[in-house]
Image 1 (tube, one colour):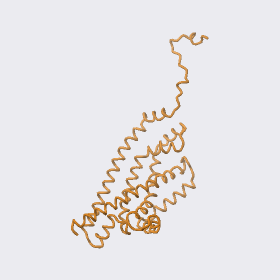
Image 2: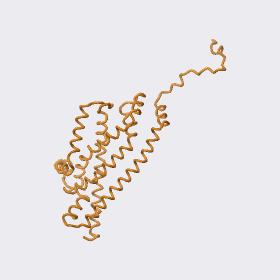
Image 3: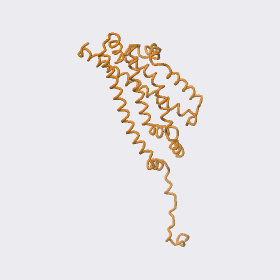
Amino acid sequence: MTWNEMQPLLRDACLDTLFMVWWSAVWTVVGGLPLGILLYLTDRGGLLRNLVVNKVVGAVVNIARSVPFIILIVWLIPFSRMVIGTSIGPSAAVVALAIGAIPFFARLVETSLREVDGGLIEAVQAMGGGTWTIIFKVLLPQALASLVAGLTTTVIALIGYSAMAGAVGGGGLGQVAINYGYQRQEHGLMNITIVLLIVLVTVVQLAGDLAVRRLARRTGRQTAPGGLWRLRTAKAPKATADVPAQRTADEPKAAVDAP
């Protein structure tokens, strides 16, 4: 196969891979983020401690994580056909990719939230902050760098999953590698697909690392002593207006005691 013949094939395969990874990552965040927050809040010592819910949800997450993706995508073919209307192509693969990645990302979210300093949570509780305030003002902002790192790991895993989806008609670079590189012995095309996957993973990792470093610096400034003082003073009620002015040392006592 000549290079001119490879170009349109590789271009379409790259677009299909990007389509699968992007939309599966979006649905993974939509499903995995609240699931991870629920696991954290309902665990021992959590704000919404409920061990029954925690154990049930945790068991479902563990079972879903234990199924190899190549088996999961075959098992979900009827479900993909019911939801999308087809069991082949990138759109059908997104369903299986998201379902396979949501439990994985949920555990990463739970781990990231556990790293948040409990003193910050106690400070907000002392100022009258509720559960939603703690989630959106403390947990998510403080764990944002770790969450982005977890999302980067998840997206890289999705790139690998998308290549597996090509084995069952999901499209993308994986299908090109199997149909042309393996079945037709087009070794040059196989090598190019491998290089493209490596480049894609490298770009995602570098972008994720850059975002994590910037978020870590910003989070460090927010948790510095000055940042914590601004948080407390912004939330604390103003009490200085009701405090009487202190008597100076030079003020005559008679002037204070006079009627």
